[in-house]
Amino acid sequence: MELRQLEYLNALAAERHFGRAAAACHVSQPALSSSIRKLERELGVTLVHRTRSFDSLTAEGEILLGWAQRVTSDVTALRDEANRLRGELTGTVRLGVVPTAMPAMALITEGLLNNNPGLGLTVRALPSQEIVRQLASHELDGGISYLDDEPLGDVATFHLYDERYFLLATAGGLGRHRRGIGWAELAELPLCLLTPDLQNRRIIDAALRSADVSATPRVEASDITGLLAFARAGYACVVAHAWLALHGLPRGMRAVAIDTPMVTHSIGLVTLPLEPPPPFVRVLRTELPGAGVGVALTQATAQWLSTRTGREAAT
Image (cartoon, rainbow, N blue to C red; front, side, top):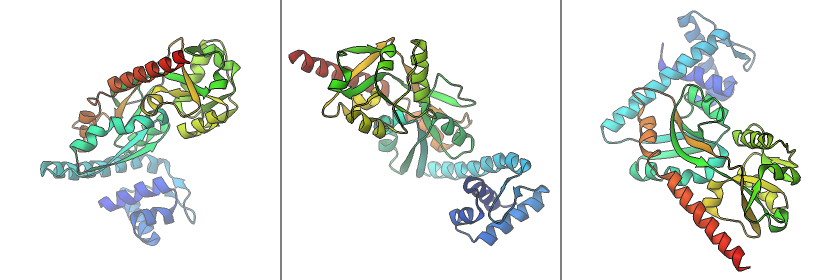
């Protein structure tokens, strides 16, 4: 058995197509297919249901895929550890991030990048459930996700900050609401919310149910940019405080805290509970929780609220 055979199996499972998997591995399709057949003979089990392109992994293939992913990940970690021991920790750290935390990523990873000049960073906006799945399949080194509200599975967690929620709309769209608004009152507004596959949306739906109301949004968007575009068009949207704290209000917009009741949820780093942790996981655990993100966001939010209140009092 050779490491490249396991890498080919991983690529085939990810791409679900022999041609695309071969291209991802920079080999010909016949070479990849032949290598996987050889692996099947060595293991004594069929790994792939074959059609002309690809059908699916067999039940045995799905089980052994987990081992293949683990082995290739461990080999990569071994190489990274050797680089670290030479004082040359290099490569690309892969992070999955829930959309509402994406605005804070430059702040969250500032120390990681400043203190490790040999590291690059790939950040992908993903639903919380997909972050957990890709951690398990070793497609991510870590995730920035919600730590409460829904089961996370077998992961190690490190708190970064608590997320708060504001209603963002045009000045006319907020009407009489100047300082705060209750969740129940959101049912009266034309809302634009994130899509139901995202945990932030499920949090909002739960808060509305707790207020004995429900809301059917006029518009659903999959990212924060979409929410803002529709907010400018006259819809009201619920945004996490990280975006407002770091970017402030767009021109012509107003925001009020949704504070009846105040709802908060914990955002943090999630990694596989590997011991000893691979070098990339270790550096994430070292650099991110100590970044002081919660304090910085709280201070920025308080300053933004104070500035906005002062402007409103003067008008």
